[in-house]
Image (cartoon, rainbow, N blue to C red; front, side, top):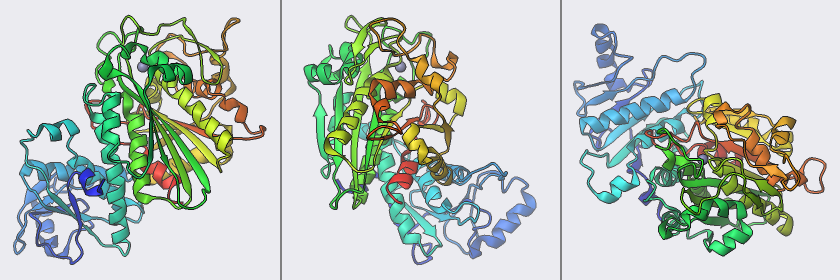
Length: 508
Ligand SMILES: [Zn+2]
């Protein structure tokens, strides 16, 4: 599908330093004010002490268009490029409220933040996104921006502009899937949404209940209650990009796509269920990443993705604690808590990825799970931060730190966590007949190392522990918990960590 259909508006690179064709001028950086506006800015500063710290909209003599000034907040040593993204968002918010349709955004260049130009454009586009259901309803009353023009004073302007288009299209796909409500973005609806987008990729959907039970038994356990309602039935959507040249490396991404998480039999009581339609943001980010892959079409990188789309429903068929289920890798897993469904729905697909590596002898493989997995990740990293956890093999290459550096540069901050022996022993079976316990029965936020423990579980239950440093075939694996960064309801889904993954793995 054409990329223009999956952008919030037309994006235009302003090349001729011309202000024509735009109905307002947006400034966010006091150091990037065009010459014809400078005198007016100085004058405003003289009588308005809040001029550089609040949003204003005013006319300038000799310039046709009104100016929207949404200044970047005062920067401390600890601020990052998100300060510019926030300012760009605030300026678009003002543009929308004021009723402009064709703004021209002056994109600053800042020595301290080398990627500020791309990040600023992405920040503006993020604010212009309209949720899929509102677009489809056709009842949007507010005026929208039809064309966003960006002025980038940089020899790389064209490249930055093109990159913004590609990344934003990926983020748009991720937001659409992430934001859809529990009925709009059911597993089958995600399949229908994705298929026309990915005509350049191989799409393979596993939806047959018996196949799921046999080949993806942990996933099938979560799906059991939802399977009783036809429109809620789960599916694992595999997407594959094969490069034109022999592959140099292989990326395999598994996304948690829980379209609604009631908690299951261990139900989320007391009002904490609201917002749980966002529990599919891991799969949404993976789908967005594949959108970028299908645009960039890397020469020699093979990419396989699995979107594990399932609803964690509650009902007479639901799985319960104490059940012992044998994982695809052959481990007997005792269920401890049905609300720990994320690791259940991803582990067998992760195991399948590992098998593909072995069967097809795939070059330089790196496996990922991406998930809004634990409240513990949110509590320990805080809002806005993802957490990356490498297995031993990925850790040897210092992968999580590289991901963190990319995230820092591109406004998607990461914390890095390390796996410890206790994370593995925590999940060990307690009695004969069980190899692993899926979870304890306290909430992750009250469990020490609550976000590391599930990563250790997935390594064990998928059999990835057989591919450690001293094995015949070491396999890199990174678990990314985006519970803090995905965009909690009522905020918009952020599509994190899409940009950092693209920067770390597709463009080096
Ligand atoms: Zn849950």
